Every structure is written in C-alpha cells, then in structure tokens.
Image 1 (spheres, rainbow, N blue to C red):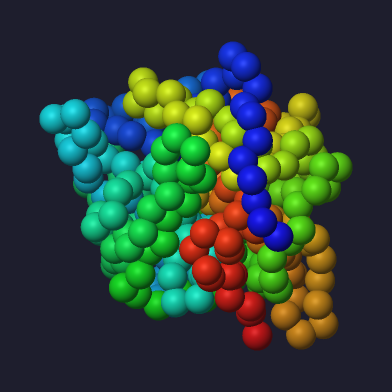
Image 2 (image 1 turned 90 degrees about the vertical axis):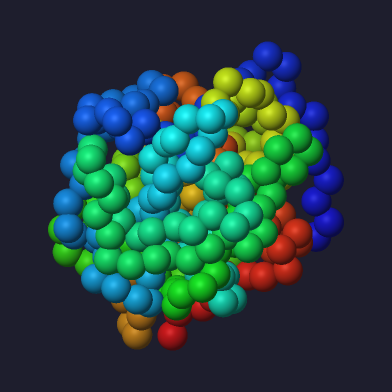
Length: 271
C-alpha cells in the first residue's frame, strides 16, 4: 500500500516522549505530563540479561544538544530483519546506544544495543530509526519490574480505526485498551522546543489509563494479542511510539506499513 501523508489537525501539538536528563541532575527523569511509575532496576527490560536483545528494552546514551550534554533514555520496538527499530527523534545517525538505564549518576548497562544506521524524523517524515551492530530477537518484553514475560512477534498488523492496541514503553510498561482513532496522519510534535510536522502516524487513545510518558519513545505498539500452542503469548507489531498528548492518555505512533515502505524491512517473525 502506498502511504500519502494527510493534513495535520490545526493547533494540535503533541510531545515526543523521549527522556532527556542533564547528567548533573539526580532527580527523577522529567516528564511532560504524567508522573513516572517505575523505578529502573537490574530486571528486564531496564537491564537485560544480554544478547540477543529483545523489544521493550530500555536504551540510553549521552548526547550533546545545543551545547548541553544530556542523558537520553528511550525504548526499542523489536527486530526488523538484522536491525532493531526505535524512534527517530531519540538520536541521529551514528549514535551508539547502550542497553540499560541511567540511575541519576551513571549508565547501568549490560552491553551495547548498536549504532543508529538510518533515521526518519522531522517535517513531512515519520519518526523511526534502525539500529545495527548487535544481535536481536523477535520478542517484546511485557514485564516491567521483574521476570521475563514477553510476547512473540508473529507479523505486522494492518492498523485501522477502531482497532484495539497495547503500548509497551520501558517507563509506562505494557498497557492495553487503547483504541485507534486515526491512521496515516500528520501530527505537530514538539521536541526540545521545536515543533515538527511528522507524518505516517497513527493515533490511539485510552481515557482510562496512562499509556505513554517520557522515556517510552521507540517502544512497540502491539495488536492482535493472543496465544499460540508453540510460541505462547503472541502479538503483531502495529508501529513505534512517537509522541504523547492528553496527559499520557493519547499516543501517536509510526505506522508499521509506513515503516515497511520507507525502510524496506519488516518485523522478524518469532519461531
């Protein structure tokens, strides 16, 4: 299917939910609206056991933006071919990501997630990036404090209005019950004070629960969740978390169909 960007809703500004911290601060990660609900620890997805890395893992590094050094924390979606997918606004081409978390003073990590190879982010573009340089697996963590609960990826979802989806950011965790209201939209997204008109996005809302917050950028949006006698819990990838609004009750995410079109890769299937 050929995707053509649509016109954004006038006056609507969402916020990119990557987590940017100055390394000098010891406060909890800042949020645009919803409070953080999780404390990072040594359990996945905060600090994984090692390769192959799974979707849902937290990633972190230091980046200099506007002359200021920041710690960045985001999330990864899942394996796409030989790559790992995340959000394009999290970091530019050439950035090295660590799997792990920032404890307020140091990066706690079990290794490197890889280096950003190609980025889609900005006006009239979508919000995705491909990371390579390590080994990955077609599972997405759904546990957020301990254990290894996960879903096996069984394909790419066809996103449509009315569809129920689950978001899976490494700060908010795994939350289901959001309903897709709009697909293939262009959305005005504020990132570090600059507003971009980002396209190829789907929008879902859950009035009853917070589904996205700072640090969730790059996490998976899942659909068609179920079970399989061989694989156990399964789901299809609907896209990658891009932005939040309405105090974390609304998420915009890069549509999986658009990602497949522009990158030429699809989510790897679990087996």
